[in-house]
Length: 311
Ligand SMILES: [Zn+2]
Image (cartoon, rainbow, N blue to C red; front, side):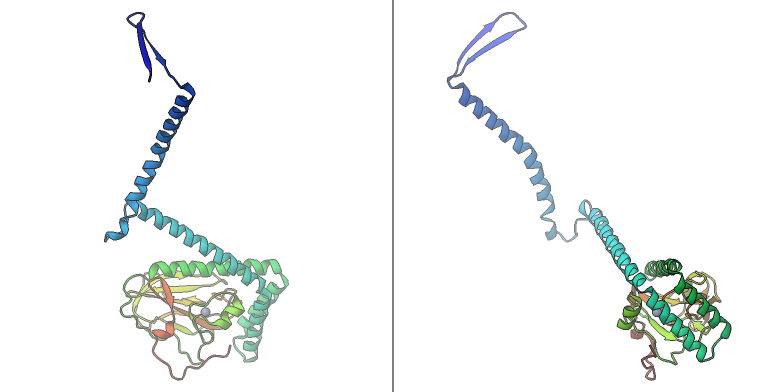
């Protein structure tokens, strides 16, 4: 027990004297009590935050206010990081195979020459491929460029095909007289070019008419010169993309009916619209539903006579 004695020296000052029987023990106890108070002040608010978040799953509407957009932003950032990683991997794969791809494309051109196609464009294509084979750096740059163009096409098509995919009905944009040269997610294609194939490839003579697979509006025309060129058409709740176009006969914003001629086909290596990753003269055809490319064969009319193509 403390003994108190209070002296008042003047009106301003108050002197208090306390006599403590066990000063060391008392000091220790005071420090311990202070420590508990400090611990409580930072620990308790943390528990309160946790308590306000954890009971959320019982409510019908999920946390939209605080955690929602932040979490969404983190997920988008993660997704774009995954996309970047995937792109870098793809680029490395394609670049490591570029000589093999160029030799494959050269063989296609020579085969076409022996079947007596368009002599001038075949000669130009052959010269171009040979110069790329000789100039490693130019070839590398061209492959990078084509990959960039293909990824841009992927991004564009994902933003266009939104809405209800209730009734996806399409017609063949070119006649599949020779069958298909690459299927949707074709393993052979991915092995050869190092990228997954989210389309079907329909071999047709260079310059064949590409027809709109359904009624719609021409959303985008991308003419990349000798790079990968394409046309994107928006329909009711879905979209279609026609790749390796060598010439365009419509303009962006045009309304088109099913069967209208949109463009001329291409795909012969080294010619306009072909780009650096091609299986020879053909139409690369994509169907996009809800930002995802689906297998066009699941929505195209069946063709019993269609057989697996030459490649
Ligand atoms: Zn293709």
